[in-house]
Image (cartoon, rainbow, N blue to C red):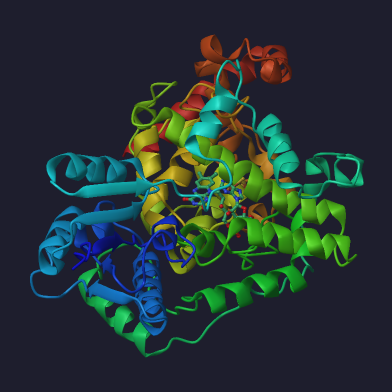
Length: 514
Ligand SMILES: Cc1cc2nc3c(=O)[nH]c(=O)nc-3n(C[C@H](O)[C@H](O)[C@H](O)COP(=O)(O)OP(=O)(O)OC[C@H]3O[C@@H](n4cnc5c(N)ncnc54)[C@H](O)[C@@H]3O)c2cc1C
Ligand code: SF4
């Protein structure tokens, strides 16, 4: 008689909700057991936005139902189930003994913290423990390390061109980029017009599963940041795909033009609102890019719009993940400017006279969403200019957005927005004065401060904080050719202005401390 080999335990994490994830592809539907566990530790290692917790739990429950309907044996541990240890590692051990499995299959976690915990579990347990590469990403950690090896500068643009060649996206039959250029970034920076009427992202009604989750989150995480309702996110693959189709049909053509624009009361403008779905596996990055590439080839959208979108996914998204795995676990401790200031309270309360910060924090509280330029040039820019500790900034971004996972959030925050890695990721700090914010938004029209004033209590704080930042960090930044013009302008200022800048900045920063 042949002995039946033992079952395998297939661990599916909350951001691996697709049947094409490596561990499920390697599993056997008839013999293996799929474990999904809601654990307190994952929901609260930073105090995530209530909407994010509800989204992930509801998407997990829907995915478990989908697997069960497709004939998988699913072991689903709910947050309040008796005996739930609150830790993913312990839940794996408990499930192994429940099912008598001799082998664990898991796709590599996105975050270093969890990867490290599973590696330690693997060393401790006496079972086969297979951690498979997460091939939902187009560039593996090894491939990225190979690309990075020996390069003096890791610039996204070079990486992106390789990804275009490799995927064939927006490439013509001669191997040249469609439209004759690799990058149409300069076409993507139109200032907003008040009369723009963007289509809102597709919204979904809550079903019974989501309603139960909303009640649970309200009770267990009621003191976390953010508004739980209205809750309208997609929670299944089918819904997420419908949301993305809606974006391609209604917003993508304008997305490129107004990517950097910000308008009061229009939090989403022409953005995809796709990262939360993409990051948990409800959308597939290559599939989305092919859909956009097809829309361009069929003449439905311009090459500018298609390139602007595809660059974000196969360029920025893959690139920041590569940087994360190349640099962790030390990356999180970098603090190039040695900034130490605590995060101001108004990042949680929105109670500030600065209309731009107020708008972004209110929108973050209500929607668990802000688009890239709001994160980079408003909340990120301000934190860097006043000298907030980059770790505190990182923890805030990780907590407040529905799409936040450390592999993507950390390089964007620490590297791109705070320049805390000293220029590994970005070629210069994303610092800007009020003039930039005024050009790209209508926030200043609603502000207590005057964006045209350079100094004094009524002046826009960004105006003096920007120059004070450059002044304070002159020794570290003056050699950067991309800042040469800014330092020349600073040097040409008259002495009175030069004296006012640190006085205004100190008064303002002392006010924050008070
Ligand atoms: C300080 C800071 C923190 C950030 N934290 C996160 C985060 O936790 N999670 C996250 O997914 N993105 C993060 N980003 C990147 C970007 O802001 C979001 O991906 C984007 O705003 C999501 O909204 P959207 O889906 O409407 O994107 P769109 O503007 O419509 O862009 C389309 C897609 O491109 C991808 N993308 C665009 N820019 C980036 C980028 N810089 N890095 C990675 N992917 C990108 C996203 O998947 C996004 O869904 C952060 C950026 C900054 C400056
Ligand atoms: S005036 Fe300054 S602080 Fe006010 S909204 Fe404009 S940029 Fe922000």
